[in-house]
Amino acid sequence: MIPGRRDLDEDWSLYNAAIRQRLGLDRPPPRPLWRRLLARAIRVAAAVLLLFGLLSALSALTWQPAPDGGRANPFAAWMTQPPTPNPAEGGAPVVTNYVLFHRVAHEPGMSVVTGWRFASSGDRGPANQFCYLELPTDGTADRQVSVASRPTEPIRPLPPAAAEAGLDAMGWEAVHRKCNWFSG
Image 1 (cartoon, rainbow, N blue to C red):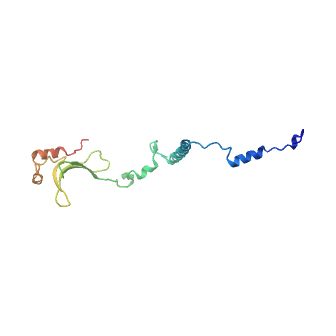
Image 2: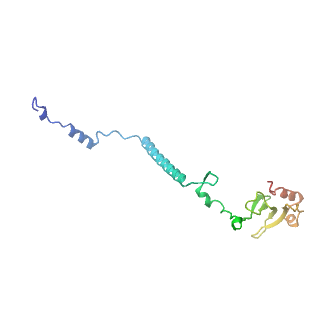
Image 3: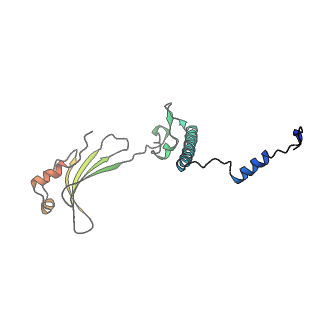
């Protein structure tokens, strides 16, 4: 070192800093495990929320206005019935008739089954109803004993097949009470 000549002095501070950094002496201590896991969970949650937002925006762009001015679900087309052709335009109306069954356990091996037969898919109530008792058999098929049918037929008297299965008049009344008639 030359007295009075600062420009000739050697400065090793940059070199020393580079060595400390290379050896890892200036590195802060590692974060605790719980902080690292929390940071990762926050990143994952942010990615999920971003993905959800993108999907919501995409679905909002694909929705078409409904004829009544509301918003219609674009996926509802495959979940609903096909449009009914207009008879005025020469197309025959589509009629879907079907039966809804309701099964109630009665005694071991026996079931009371009520059927609601609808004439059209647009009906609010069944066109007719029926109720029968399923009796077990030793084969693969069950025997059916008719209990009643509505709207025309009243309750039937105790049939021999039900008596053979062990039902008496009170048991037959209990079967009739388990018929699930449509009430509107």
